[in-house]
Image (cartoon, rainbow over all chains, first blue to last red; front, side, top):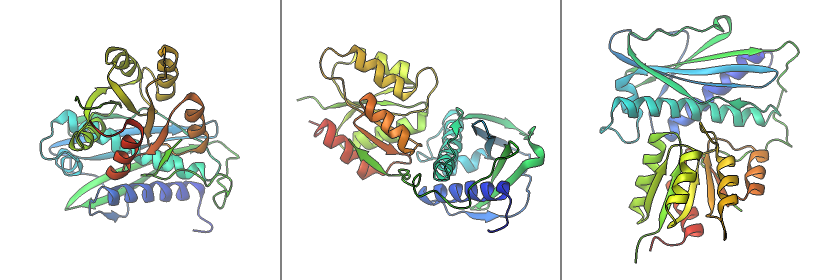
Length: 179
Length: 126
């Protein structure tokens, strides 16, 4: 939206990326607004993937119950806890991958980190980026997929108003080139 | 006649499983590696590998380093590699092409496109 801060625009961009990814996975998901705290009972999984360059750095975190990640897993129902944490990593990785591809169209190249995940009872999230943390959550068949987008920008960084036509030739998700 | 063998190099177990299920359902055999370093070992150990599907960002050795390494190993034409990654940036695609990659697919992959790429590069499963 015109007048939105860069933080807000970036958060909206990654929220759109997650929504697109869930749609491609054929998962019915509804965006939730506002900060939510997932229930602390039962086994939960958190997956993290970072990104950055000299002007901007941050991370995207996904948090949800093991039951939710089991629902999202393409090989369900025959999955182990290791499968679930691996898939949670891949979902964080693919969410950030889409975000990086969108950012590239604005002329911003971001390097990714390798995704990491954790599985535990009563999992709590904490971040040193807390002031710039934006919740991005989805309701999926009565369960909550919690997302946290953390970003920190150097003074002077400004996201272009529109994608650059020169940079807009990113190969989209699902696309293929044979040389 | 034995089936064609495709090497899948990806640090995600789930992605390797997804790709393997897709390829096996089409009649191919698969070998899996968790990173570029394991992938190089697999290429050296399995002369029958007809093609590699390789992630870009992996621990130990990334996909571009993997291509460079197996290209240096090969006495004849190196085994063809198609990148399978979340990245779609044109400069990375150009780098992979210069390094010798034969194609680029952006995850999540579409089953039919993946199989079309494999058939085109590795041929029918045999």
